[in-house]
Length: 512
Image 1 (cartoon, rainbow, N blue to C red):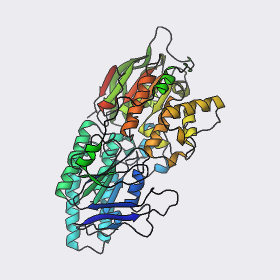
Image 2: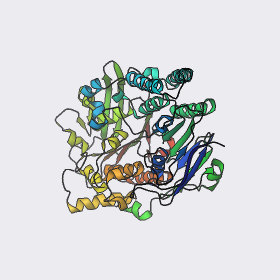
Image 3: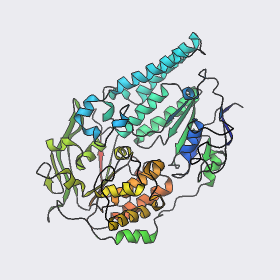
Image 4: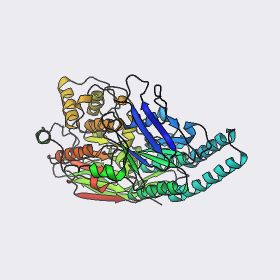
């Protein structure tokens, strides 16, 4: 049987970033693999070994990509980490960029970037001396057929004239996947591909991958933190536990060994510690007695050029209500939250009341932000600060990206308290960029809670977390919202992720 990827006694060269024991893994033709493990277990490092980002000592990875005619590993293996990347300007990305009209006007169109990706793949094909003209022609025809199929499946015709920076998190994933598939890879590695997609888009992606597996020679490797809905096309599982790659197992055997997640995992003493917290927030700008409205949208419309994101939206959130915000990818959920969080300047052109005051009546954005704890995919992307995790958490005290002052010792104690609550106190002094994506998400969650906000806004807060940590975060949210004066607005595409305290729901539909 053909060994597509073969690692025998692999040890990485880097002295600091290596697995606990030598890696042994063989992936045969026809196998579709899920790499699973807790946050920080070493899943990404295994992918780095598979893609030669981490070279091995003495025993390099061996590959056999037949029937692919392309010789390079980079031509045959495509890895999509699905970081919320908006194109080539990543180095200049800043939080709130999506809402700045000047940056929107400067951003390329989706169609331009997809055409460029297709042209680059064709140029690489033309320069490949190992291929005959007939082989090049066949590959090009397959790519054209796949491109049309992807455009139809993901409804990309509605996105082609959209600026890349305006794509929602879910739309961005469709774009990234399409761009990668246009290169016709032999092995496609996807990191948590279903996170951030609505129900229909998740179904579409599963069906597409199933179809590609059946009709092409492409093999799929999924890197999964959320392991309770592994697609049926997966044949084998590779567990990674505490920086050790365990033997590959058939999917059925692995499932038979799994234990259910407990109903609650937050320790009772930590739950009680949250409930016993004093209400530390000042009351300036909060609703006056008799006025319970925390958020009041009155016929709010948001447009960028000729594209309408929200149209005549009206809804009211009162103090101590707990709302679930859902909707299709691109329906305006993140835009709505950007208005509430005072990140979107179009708030001034609409009739919006926050904390009992009309927007634009003299309050600053910091007057609003100091009462809000917030996390989102955009925020995670903006936090590329290589500073200790405790400083990331402390930045939530001043709503800054990075820490620009040294908090008093008692405030640092509060930061440590919330890191302990989220189970990441051991990473107090670990630099943020050395943490796994899931561990980074927990640090940013601690940042959202650190100032004991009246309004908690959580945009896909469980994104990238393993099952145990998902349950822990749900426990923390449920406990926090049991305290007086706490209001919640939460976005998720998974109904089971919603905490039990949810008492109101709003669903947004995408403007056609």
